[in-house]
Length: 130
Image 1 (cartoon, rainbow, N blue to C red):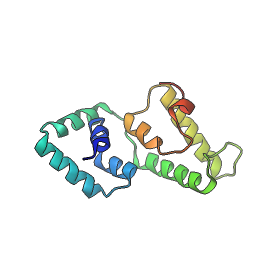
Image 2: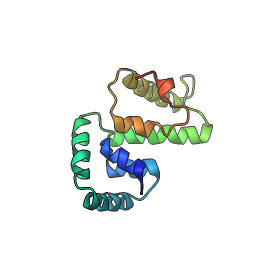
Image 3: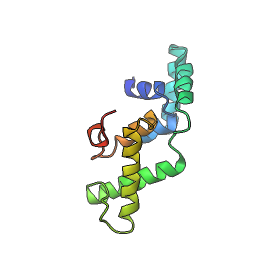
């Protein structure tokens, strides 16, 4: 049983997004939801409704690349990028600020919020109340 996978799927995250977040093989995630649909018909329909409601603010390949770069920076430096950093750090800092602004403005999709929670210094409190 993977209730956290089920909640993310019901919120509209794709199997790839869940696999990335949970550090699992995407085939394992797919198999779980195929089994889930057999035992709980309508699971996929709930997911597709939430996915469609996510609109255009889905995490794109470029968005994921930026997130991965920030995560790698954080692993190396044990902090989020700062504005006073070098030419590599400053664009990452601007990207993080843009994400926080989108969150504060209630214009960020749930999949992005969930994926950003993997950042150590990213939190709902630091991004602003929703």
